[in-house]
Image (tube, rainbow, N blue to C red; front, side, top):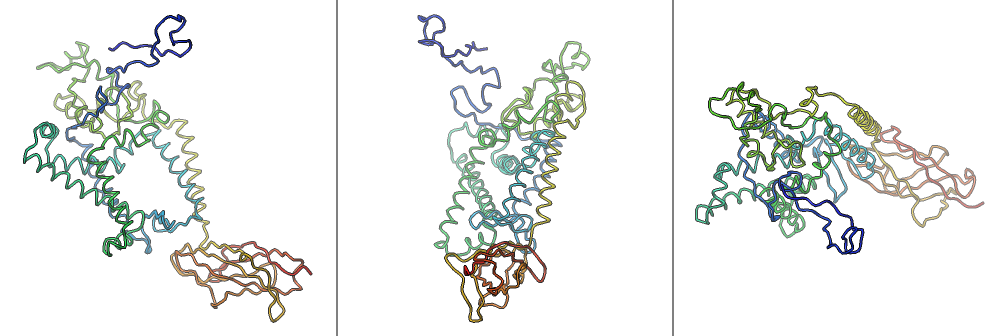
Length: 497
């Protein structure tokens, strides 16, 4: 153990405490490298990075994660090309401010829906994390799936397991090493190009992406620039940055201290069963081991060598742990060889290990669940009451009233209609509080194309005898196919007398 100096506030001249003649004392203390909480598992004492060579996991949990990852990868890469009623399954087009979720087009005017959906999403994360810890990170996070189920497996296939990888990196450069490294990084770059293009398709849509690929490149310099940029970013993440994306960039791990409690299910080491750790001696029986005061943990470090973030799960919950279950498989394999029960490292809560309590629905979970249900209910209500059309009806800037040849007073309006459906809709305007005539210049009827915005001008004509004053409030009904959609309030300007 390294010696520790207590934190010393700067309270006197020279920072020497009560003795003005004492030398200044440091306000920091050296890192205790024996304490896992005081340093990262991937950092050395000189601050450089410790490159990890995790051994390839095997076991039932890894097998189940592999099956799930294939399903999720298929969804990830085919998502931009799946169409529902002609619209993408998911598209977040920030440039044109068009968003398609499950085939439904959302506009910037639907921001309230987006805000409620985000609140429900974050509330869902809170309740899910409170109950099940970082299950999301280990099983469904795209970073974990692509890193552990795609790039890491390719690395095992090309360079071999952890021992072979370590030996290859330590060996001097040769034709064989150069060939293997070029082959691996060539595949990594190609995969990064595919992932970058998939992300671009989620942003601008698959049609726009195909247009960039098939058109003259000189017409799509910006699109090609984003293609290259995304490719380089993903290549850097999966070839070099790796587990540090979870440790340094993703904030989810840091939420744990606020969201987890003693009832949260996490990947946990059963210290009551495993301690005191000691190697397994040849011909030793479990009874002899227990009589010697030793637990089931044989200190083989198999749970450590398979960890993709380099931690020792026996130290308890740590920020770097992504709940990938590799340590559970490794420990189960050791327990099987020793004919001991599985589950020394398993999904469990702290209360489950210390008191044998089952997972339970705590008061905090009930509170979060109530908030989440309320937000989901509000979101469903907003979606169900979302109108097919959204209309903006404003008087034309700078225009005054006009008198027609028939002696009627007319006002000119600028109208914007957003059709939120997938089909073209005939739109009609009716003044509901006064007998008036509404004219759409140049067309017998306004047609709003599906999933599009249309802008036009509208004339409203009123008999001057109906005007109570120079400014008359109007209620304009918007109809689509004879069905009332909404009512808009505006004003009508007329002569003062």
